[in-house]
Figure (tube, rainbow, N blue to C red):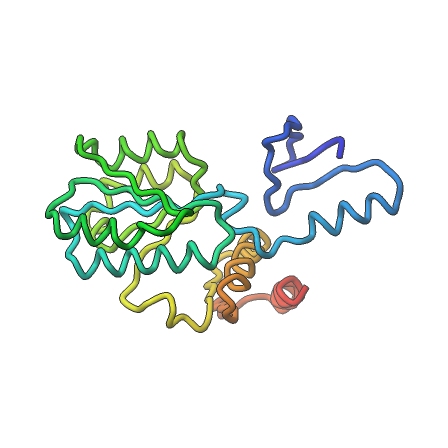
Length: 231
């Protein structure tokens, strides 16, 4: 590999560079060797949360949570940690409340070598904690509970700056999920979305459904869309 183009710009090659959807790779070599490279690069499924990062990060502000919501968050995070190809699950606890809830959390993660529990006793706040840990860890997926989104303005800028997928907890359990759905709002984005969606779906072992609600979409665009997802 002697060159990689991203967004029509050539990147500096270095060992830490991670390939992303729509990257253009320039290679020179024997045809048989090049085919092996193609086969390796083509194995996109089973890699998420890469290329965004290698770790899942669960943020829990216990001042906002109940015992029930804490147990649900831990169960969902452990489920994803077991299903996805991440290296570690980082659980960050801030503003700890009762000894009882802390004991529940410690008991839940005690015997899992791929889970790291960290507790913030200094009350640094969401922005500062995420800023520090995003530098410290290679976070590929950030998990946030529903109460965190009640004050959207407080977390909006931090989330956008991270530029990684955000998992927002729902009312139902992840174990009950049967399908992964993609709602398209711009046909120009589906080539970037599809590898990630199919990767997650394959690891969770669920089906993928595509929803295109454009009532006046051109037929040629619809055909290209179907051809892309079928390939």
